Amino acid sequence: MDEDIAVSIGFVIGNRQRERIVQILGSKGKLSAEKIAKFEHIPLNRVNKTLADLAQKKIVFEDEYNWVLTDKGQELEKEMKKQA
Image (cartoon, rainbow, N blue to C red; front, side, top):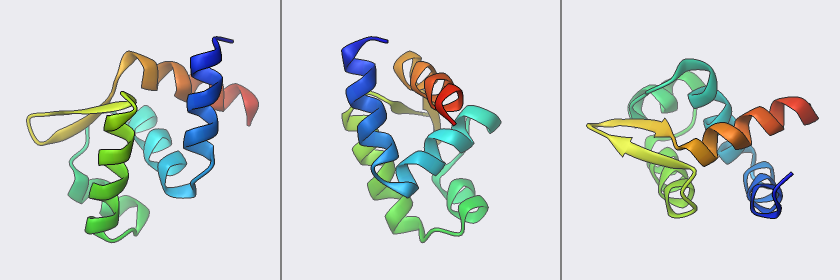
C-alpha cells in the first residue's frame, strides 16, 4: 500500500464522521451534503465541515452541488473495506 494512502486512511478512520462519509459516498456515489446529513443523522454544519476537511486532503470534491470521491478517495474506500 502506498504510504500516502496509509496516512490518508489514518486520517479518515481517526474520525467516525469522516469514515462514514467516505463509506457512504463509496456505496451510494454522488450525494449532496444535505442527503449525507440525512442518511447519517449528522447536523448539516458538521457534514459541511467534514466534507471541507476531506476535500482539503483531496479525498472528495464537489461536483455541481454533489460530493464525490476522488480517485484517491475511491482507493481509500477500497482499502478500508479490505481492512474491515
